[in-house]
Length: 137
Image (tube, rainbow, N blue to C red):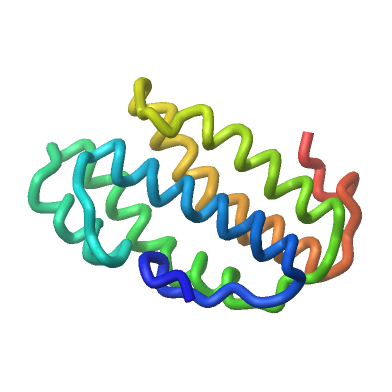
């Protein structure tokens, strides 16, 4: 169980490992971006909401609103698919480049992309679609 995200990943070991790595990167993005640590993402967002300027609150509101949807998608049985794993690894590659949060807007973009792309990727592979149909590139 990933306590911080509040989900348990199941399914193919390689897919779980890749998605877990992507989730850890996004946790690190949150922590590095705001220099705040918490036991759960909900706790993290609540702590931040009290501390950040108004323009940042819009980002946190987005995260809070999208979190239930993300969690629902992360609770599926991940199938083995080389394309699924490759798609997740691509997101890891992009997001890990921003882990130092040298460019805060890019780090925020990575978090938003994670919230958008993870459900899309999982849903499409669950339905058995190919990488071309997902239109990743």
